Length: 262
Image 1: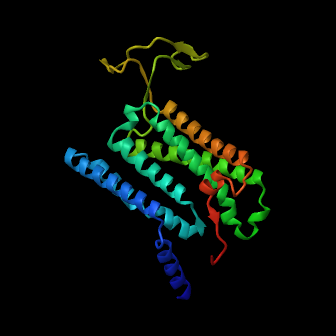
Image 2: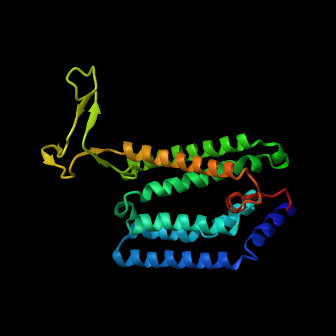
Image 3: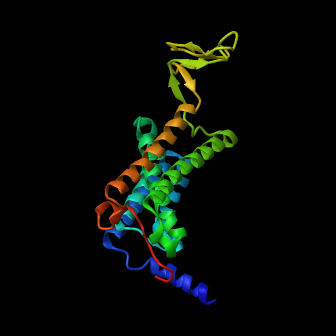
């Protein structure tokens, strides 16, 4: 019972003494999500109403993560994280930024890889809290990059599952103008290339997309490469500042791992 009470008190403490900048960011994000929810309701976009509610529900998440894993994020990082969640989800889906801006999805995956790199970097300290001082920089950087790559794979598994079982199109199609395949070669013994594709018909009906459809392969690989690039960027930034806890990047983008009971 005493342990349960301590955990409850710790959770209450996590939501006290919130800095003014953090409170202001929370209010702005909640108002943005609420306004987007009203917009969805007015336009009949019922699917994205749930997304707006999820963003609002995610507002307490950074401090909940601090309490659950006994770490401390900087105020700047918490604001950055919430802006990423709200901006990526709402701007992308509700306001169709994925289609309006060609590289919006790529930027999101780059940032996601960066964040997952941070998680991997600090994971070794969390798992080896009492012996963190003995963990080498190389081990931390390898963990950061590995975690970013693993997160990309898991996300693409999720997209594939949604497309396969729920008839979504999360692995977005890409219009291409050339294909290379064994199957289009009569002998199927060599790769055949078809160039300058401007029209494709299915069952005699033109697709009218201006080329051939790549069904998710290019999108998946671009997403994974972007995640990997984000993880590498995080590792490079950490290496450039030498892991110095006094540097701006480490103070902002590396959580402080607390000892038990702190």
